[in-house]
Amino acid sequence: MNTKEPFKILIADENHFRFAQTICDEMASSAKARGTGIAKRSPDYIQKKMKEGKAVIAFDKEGNWAGFCYIETWSHGEYVANSGLIVAPSFRNSGLARAIKNRIFELSRKLYPGAKIFGLTTGLAVMKINSELGYKPVTYSELTQDEDFWAGCKSCVNYDILISKGRKNCLCTAMLYDPKDHPEPKKTEEEFRQHSKLYERFMRIKKWKLLQPFLKKEKDETKNGVKQKSILHFLFNL
Image (cartoon, rainbow, N blue to C red):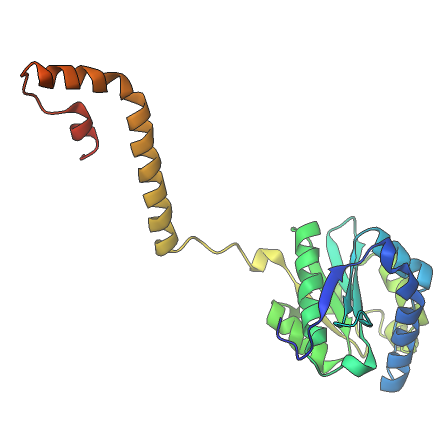
């Protein structure tokens, strides 16, 4: 993990419920300080995400809460959003935000491998991290049209702007990761050679096991002076 502090990033669970209020307070405080909008979430909602195993939480080496992020799903799992990324003030500019984004992205890909992962943000730092993960800027029309998602924007100070634009634009930048644009890499030639060697070894062992009954016969023939090329020698040196 490329951070200046030895952070521990965990998949959140019921043991972390006590941090829900702190997380919500810090989300609201951070948005106010930036002068930007944010869809508000309640402690109950944050705890729900923790219970479902759809959130990650970070701590420093002393066990102090350091950061958080959670997963939301829309359109029956077709779309996934990594939301509520927050880092405690004392740990900002440490690389922790990037580490949290990487961890929640990995969790999203594991839980929803075929889903499109998207985000709406006004933060340049988050845009940069998203770009590194493979996100691309898109129009709002390429995001989920699930009404529940857009309803979450009602608590944002910029909601009137969103509605005035017919939900086609706002101050946030939309970014999307589509797994179809990132196919699994093909095996390299070196990997192929390594697998080939393992296969050859397996075949040799298999031949050895299958031809055990012939060993005694060959030894007996050798003792009796019968000179012939060993079957094993032939098979093992094709």
